[in-house]
Image (cartoon, rainbow, N blue to C red; front, side, top):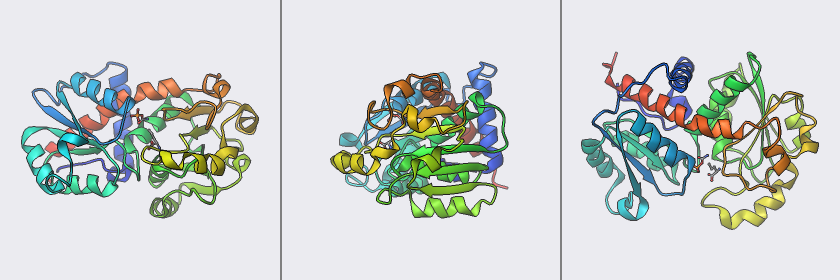
Length: 307
Ligand code: CP
Ligand code: NVA
């Protein structure tokens, strides 16, 4: 049955662990599948990228495929022709479509009409590949635990939303420290609250969010497409900066994560980013392994007959 990853909850809890298992094996070089052999992959970007673009392109190459980088001036998705028609056409050429764009509804529309897997490489609502890779990084680096205390500090943006979406499936004690003006998405919040195995707290008190946390996470205060709000967001979020004073309240062996790109000196200080708790570059490396695991999983499942 055709499978997509528009958000993390397109997967079941069991499938998430299957993706992590594939990721682990691929990272160790224990498997080298070529599910994209002889196929091209459309990589649509209407926002900038370093990690997502390069990790997908390298991942596609390593899975035997050929990436095609498509920017907005060419494709003009939804403007030059309907998203449905673009999805139908692309599906005749490529084995998979990866898209980074603004409106999440553009990704779900593409997935609705495509006959190949569609992967969300970030929208204004969510960043599922990022959070799957990040949780894999936590599992790799933290002491084994049934439920991690994860503190996300900063803007209630796409990254915070995908953490909530993960918490709707995987048991997490998730604390989001943010201002009253920058909350995460309501729908994502409601879905997370339905998972009784997880605990979710949104607080305006950064110390409460960080208390005894196993993982402390941040992201830029003003996301792509919102850079005009930079001054306003900086004012609203300054007390949520990751610095050594705030992090003294976290668990002594906490990990520091940042999806990157970082605006050093704003949401995170240099000494935290480069300090002994930071795993940000392992986290960035894992984007490559998780993209490969996601693509392999979706291609494999899409080949199976509908039950
Ligand atoms: N973390 C992340 O998605 O980085 P890019 O914006 O560089 O792809
Ligand atoms: N929230 C950030 C994430 C970048 C990877 C943005 O959307 O710009």
